[in-house]
Image (cartoon, rainbow, N blue to C red; front, side, top):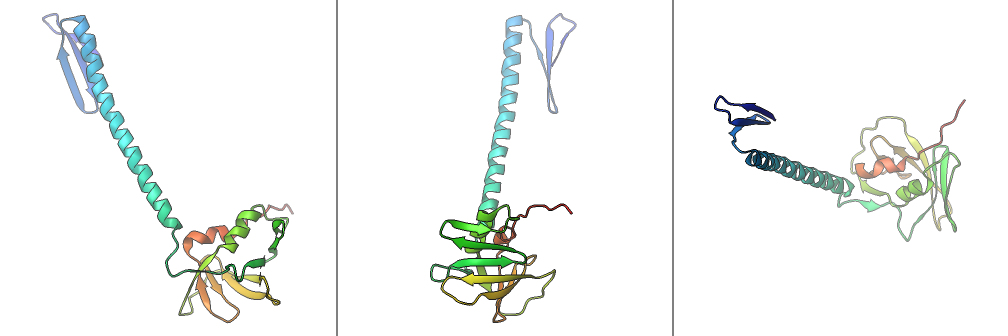
Length: 189
């Protein structure tokens, strides 16, 4: 805000707000102060309103995106359920096991409970055609309660593809894939 005196002795207040340059000729000091406060308050109020509305809009958009990314497609089915719950899983060299006291994992796994719950609640979609695979596959040895023999499945984690022992192909929805990989403790050589 700049103040200067015009030739007739009346002070002029110049307020620059964005691209608008307002000049007000004031004769009384009291009116001058009141005009400054009113003009500045209106300008700040408008900007505050714009910022608040933009923030609410951004939060709403991010909430909708987050909610939609967690929704699994309708045609998915649970890999494990109450009649066939997961009891053990070996993921490469890492493993998890359900005991009476809860889940137990390899010593290197840092997120045991989250990893076990992700596998226990994983959903899959049956594929009709054999998909193109990329990356290195991971062998999964899966043990289900009340079954004597474990099953060998193949996981292509980058694409979320699972191959069953019978040769059937399944896909894991993208929103569930990240939590299926364990977080492991770093090892120094």
